[in-house]
Length: 357
Length: 265
Image (cartoon, rainbow over all chains, first blue to last red; front, side, top):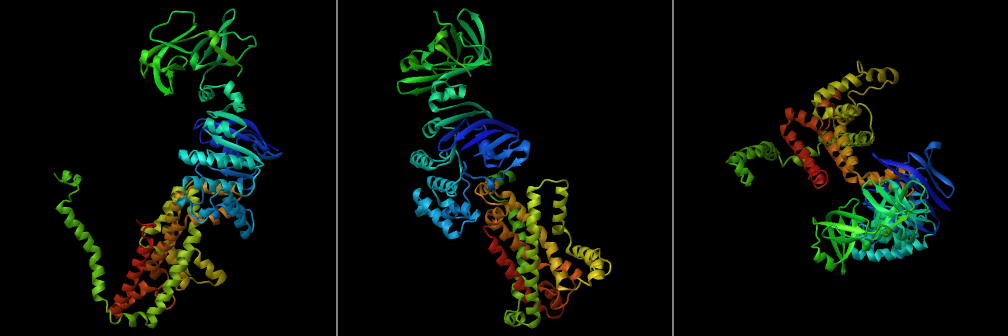
């Protein structure tokens, strides 16, 4: 039992092109910044935005394949969706909201209400069963929306930013609930999120979506150790520069990206095409003036932000390419680091780790 | 000076006077009615055979007109709010026309369309089926519908535009067919607008005079609704005219109360 998505979907002028698989009994996170096209992918899998090209196949049933004229409307897909804005029906009570998918599918009223009550009890909101959505707290509404998506036992569960609307306290409580529910749900789970912590704690696999494209697919561990894009690198706290290699001399080369170039060790495996260079912020040294020494990467630029984390500080630099350096609080003081200050950054060529894209 | 006074929120004296005149314009006729209504005879007048007949007919005509306006208005509002087709602006302008058209012209138009002898459709109806609309209750209903229909369409269209379409999308992902979504989500969520559309078109139909008297005539028990009864009584028994007018004002007042906080704010 698997979901296989390979689509181009368009909403307005924005097109998303994505290809990934998801397996039964596991959670796949679609992780990406806001506006990267994650919600369009959800709408496409749900049948609300039919894809322009490609196919969506769930358990060997083709749900979408425009080339073959196949399109299964949302109401005939075995799916449950928790929308980012929940979209609970304002005119129905919590219980009636949960019973809605059962009644719509022709389940008798008494049975529908029994099953709805049962799932509301499991999610600990039975005492609010009679309340209208606008009378519910954020956490309660979220539980009702989750119950409504689960009650008809879909084969595919789509959760679009299920925790983002909640305050910190409610989010922590609901994360537990969500984890339990995901664990007990036997079908395919897709979690859409922009929060890397949420993705890596709840999902076995992460699909990173950026600017309408999938840039990396892997386990949280794989992405932590080898991020393939600036966004992924940012998430795990390292610098990533994507570009092509040009040889300089024996053993070294130049990594040329659209935003600048770095001197890097020449990888033996390299043939052609793009690679990703990873620079750990702790390896970047900062200087008030142009440094003397053996480091082959020497760049200058303005400080764009300084973030204190414990006894260390992360310093963002508008160098070419842009970098993040991690320094001690002592250095912050000594170099008078704050936004707008011009500094020099240096690191050795061997401190750039190269990964195939 | 005047503009700075306005900005500070002090009302210029001229405005106070003109505003008071405006209120008087509306209040005086109401006051006149209130004072000239023969309160001791009201019960007797309103329970007289002719008044009761007109009242019964008015309720039938207005309610039927409101129902037709809703049944035909909802699909039209749907098409106007969500469809995209050439000439949509033209269709909307056409639909709104009866709101601003003199009712007597509406009556003449209805005659031209449904008149027995020369009506576009009317002549054909009479020739083939022996159906005559003019001077029947059906004609009164048609006249009332003609003038109240635009109100229903406009209010329903505004309601559909204000509806969060994503709710309908969510319903479909929950297994609801289009028909189920319409019955269980779209219409219930639009409840207040539907109520407003019904009440407004009902009130407009209840007050209809010009188109009715032109197209349907003034026949007691068949086409003589309350406004027509007022008009006739004014010449024979003015006190009765005042009493029936008072009744219509009470109804209008009730309509405003019913809409308060829903459609009107």
